[in-house]
Length: 282
Image (cartoon, one colour):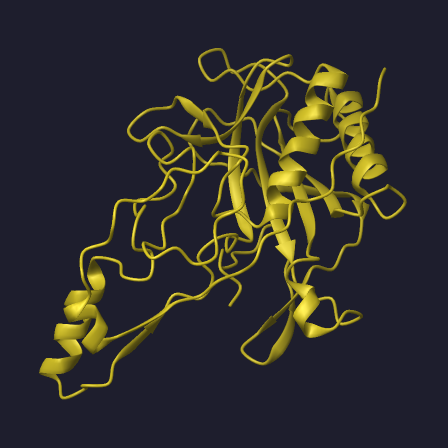
C-alpha cells in the first residue's frame, strides 16, 4: 500500500466587509466579475465581493454568489429598522471565505473515485466539492486526506439504493480555540475533528477492520506526528437506518483528543461530535 502525504493546507487572507444603511441603499450595481481559476486564492476584496467558487452552479450549499457584503435581505432589514427608528443599522459579514468550521458531507461514488460533498438541490446526486470556498481550508485538506484513505484502503462509499457500502457520511469540525497560540493565529491553525459515519451497527460488526484502518490512515498522515498536523481526533458513528437521518445513536472515540474546545459567549465549552454547533464560530 502506498501512502501519500497530504499537502499543506492552503492559506488565504480573511476579509470582512461592513455595510451601513446608507451604502446599502445607494451602492452602484457591481461590475462584471473577472473569472478566476478554481485553484487560485480569492483576490484582495474584489469590488463585487464574489464567492469565486467553482462548485457554485451545481452545489446546493451556497445561494449567494456576488456582493457577499450586500445580501438581498440587507435592504429589507435596513427598511425594517428604519421604520422602527433605527437609522444607524450596520451589517458585518465577518469572513467572506473559509468561514464554515463545521460540515456534514455525504460520501458516495466508488472506492476508486469517491465523491465527498453535498446533494445537488432537489436530488440525491452528490456534488463533489473539493475546492469549497466556504469551508475552512483545513476542512478541504482533511477531505482530500480522507479521499486518499478511501482509495488506498478500498473503503466502499455508501450505495443508497442497495443499503450497502462502508462509509455513509463524514462530519468535519474545526476547533479554533488553541490557547497555546496567539489569538491571531488560532483560526488558520485550527485542527479538524473527523467523524466517520459507518454503515454498521457497532464497532464489532463486519467491516470494522476497514474502519480502524481508515482511522489509523487519517491519524498517521494528519496527526501530530505527521508532516502537517491537521487532525484533532477521529470518531465513529454507527448508522444502518435507510432514512435520511445522518447520525445513529452509537458513537465511539477512536483516536486523538476527546475534548473539542470552543470559546462561546465568553466561556470555554467542550463539544462532543454529537452536539450541535454553529458553522460560523464567530
